[in-house]
Image (spheres, rainbow, N blue to C red):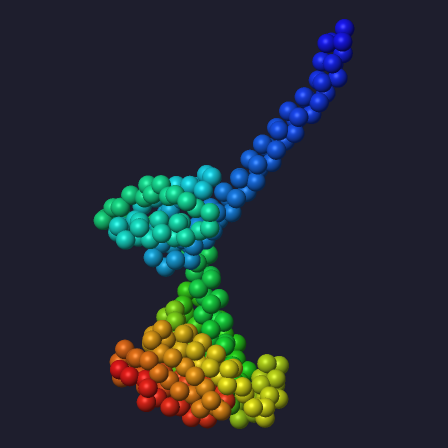
Amino acid sequence: MIKKTKMFLLAPGIALMMAAVSGTAAADTISQDVTDAHQESQIWTSYALNPYLRANDLNVTVRSGKATITGNVDEGVEKDLAKQIALGVNGIKDVDNQIVVQSDYVPPASSTSRSYGQVIDDATIVAAIKSKLTWNKHTSGLSTDVSAKSGVVVLTGIADSEGSKKMAGRLAMSTRGVVSVENQLAVSAKPSISDNAKSTAHEAGVTVSDSWITTKVKSTLLYSSNVDSSGITVSTNSGVVTLGGKAASGTERALAIELTKNVRGVKSVSSKALLI
């Protein structure tokens, strides 16, 4: 009788323990599924944004830190790139790279609509051009609208002179990723001023800090397609910008100097330390 009573009393406890263990296992499973899905999304997004992989039909699945990649590419370097990108995602410990390399592989034809990667590229181009126009002393007061589709940029709005219009077109054309520029800016002696331009005009009398100038020069060089900014150093002292390092050619050196001179707040440029 006593044994039966003890078993009767222990039964609910055992059931609760089993339920708790089962519940924990289920929660762990859900947590792992969420992690797997998050990692798959990260890898897929990286492929979609990468200009060397976005055109290929690649698939990825992740299970407990192991990524399996399938699909086709036309070069071995693309297969290796896909693996390295997957391994770069936090939590991915192993990659089963099942991608098939076919020298005669033709990526699937793209649809008429832009891919996710192309949309991001165009948005980045627009942001870069708008920034360059705002930082440039010859275009900062213009009322300019910028749009981009598949690398084709359209500039609309009003420029205060033919020189400003041409400068805006040059800044846009020299931006990374730009294929062509349709400069539709209208020239008017009295352009309408956007809110952003009004703010710029209001700040015209304020001394621009050296750190701001350095940051904007670096960004301008970074966004420019004809300048490899990785080899160029930038420092500013009282509005005087010093460029150092090494340029790939005389043309690149001259362009870096010109772009720097045109940044708002720059008084002069010292380029003796910028070698070829």
